[in-house]
Image 1 (cartoon, one colour):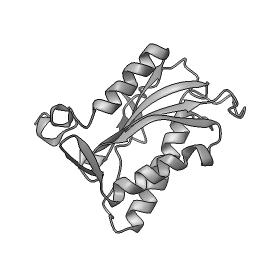
Image 2 (cartoon, rainbow, N blue to C red; image 1 turned 90 degrees about the vertical axis):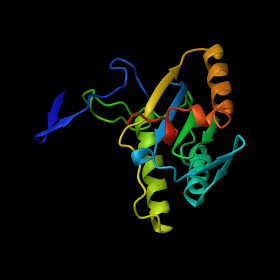
Image 3 (cartoon, helix red, strand yellow; image 1 turned 30 degrees about the horizontal axis):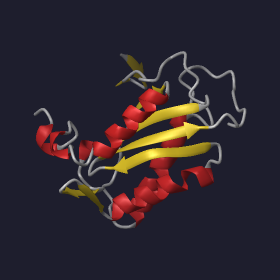
Image 4 (cartoon, rainbow, N blue to C red; image 1 turned 45 degrees about the horizontal axis):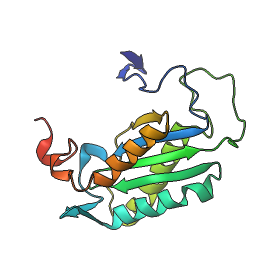
Amino acid sequence: MKRFRGKYRIQSTRLPTYDYTSAGWYHVVICTAGRTCVLGRIREGIVGLSVPGCIVAHEWQRTPHVRPYTVLGPWIIMPNHLHLVLGIKSETPGTKTEAGPETLQAHSLGAIVGQFKSRCTRRIRRRGFHDFGWQPRFYDRVIRDESELQETTQYIALNPVEWEYDRHHPNNRLQ
């Protein structure tokens, strides 16, 4: 584990040789800080969003308008995390630099997610949820083909129905 400013730093989970500005589909999972269930509730397999959850939904739906080089795939907001499928179009503006692998590239998946999380946090805190936050990192998977896209779509659709068995459910976390 590397150190940054005297503190241990977790290595990136991104594929070291993959260009995250590349056109393609990505499955992203973002969790709230401490996995607190602040985004909504699930009853009988149906998600009811809270005020913070509605803000997150609104900001996500704005993504292709703010970043015209993106397209939204299936997505769902769960009580303490969200599943998103994001497409980056081939028309992504060419902003590559000779920066090192630790440098965040403009128009990359990491930049998009970081800006989205930042915008949501600002709006949610302005609405009085001053303790709201996200986990510092996010999970991503490059979707490699149509079959994997269909599997991811089905997984996302079934997520609310399977909530009580989900590893993110507060009752299922390791103590």
